[in-house]
Amino acid sequence: MILKPTRRGVLAGGGAFAAGLATPFLARAQSYKPEYKISTVVGAPFPWGLGAERWANLVRERSGGKINMKVYPGASLVGGDQTKEFTAMRQGVIDMAVGSTINWSPQVVELNLFSLPFLMPDHKAIDAITGGEAGKKLFEIIGGKDVEPLAWGENGFRELSNSKREVRKPDDLKGLKIRVVGSPLYNETFTALGANPTQMSWADAQPALSTGAVDGQENPLTIFTVAKLHTVGQKYVTLWGYVADPLIYAVNKQVWGSFSPEDRKIVRDAAVEAAQYNKELARKGITQADPSTLKEIEGLGVTVTRLSDAEIKAFRDATRAVYDKWKPRVGNDLVATAEKAVSARSS
Ligand code: X2X
Image (cartoon, rainbow, N blue to C red; front, side, top):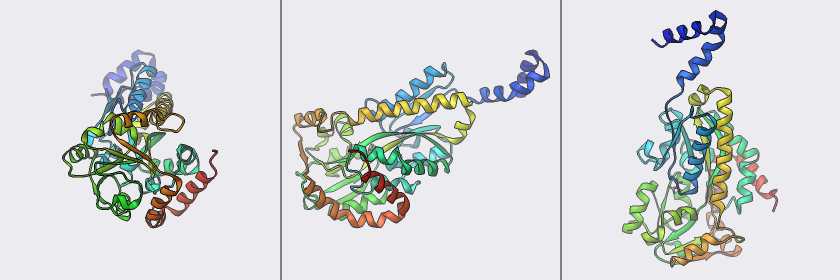
């Protein structure tokens, strides 16, 4: 059925020689889908969703409309269960994703690296890991699982919020019900701190906060502001920067293989540019040089607590056993490479 018109078209275009050259091209052109679905957990105007939109727009523009990518936020392609996103992409149920390392860590255990408490003290530390040997190794691992990773974006440093009280020391967390996601590493971290962690998706988290079924959560401040978490009772924010989740821009391998080399370059370059834009947005307003987002949150009547180094050390000490336990699970070499990159980073 498909072959006949193709052959006729090719032969009409100039005989057997041209047919030999042109067939692979036509076969490929025919296999392009009308739409490529990008999965994300949050859409625009979160930096995460804006990055995914930018990726789609750049590719549409540069491919002359041939590659049409569409963002599906809310992990809607996996029924809201964000921890199934990687499997769905691997199986080709979804074509592409801008996914959090946390959500993919149940399938890619090495991605728990970024969830080791207090591994990364600042943005330079994240960049030293993702931009160095450890980042390369992680892309190789993902590349071995039917997924082509293209670029590192960012959700961000995950700060703690709750509805009950200011948290300055581990003891303040005692008995607080905290929503977490992803890997058992989070359960262990919060249990070590005396809190009462409970796993749930982002879709379930907001109603749970709103009804008081849980007291608190941890997420980047851009998620806090855009999702207006102060309206679901989150009155206290502690800046402790205990983990950060990078995002990975990625494509199912079969889809990737179906693109011409020129189109692959378009998709990869666009991912790198969009991820850079995403990172800039994710880092805006939360640094000491530019605290505008922090001010905005305080303006909402939220108490924002910045911990001193000594106060952070108390949390680090309390979670050290979890770090040590997970180090071999993540991979001793990989963690050592990441630790070295962090201590050698430029300041
Ligand atoms: O569910 C979360 O907390 C979120 C939105 O940050 C992730 O998808 C990891």
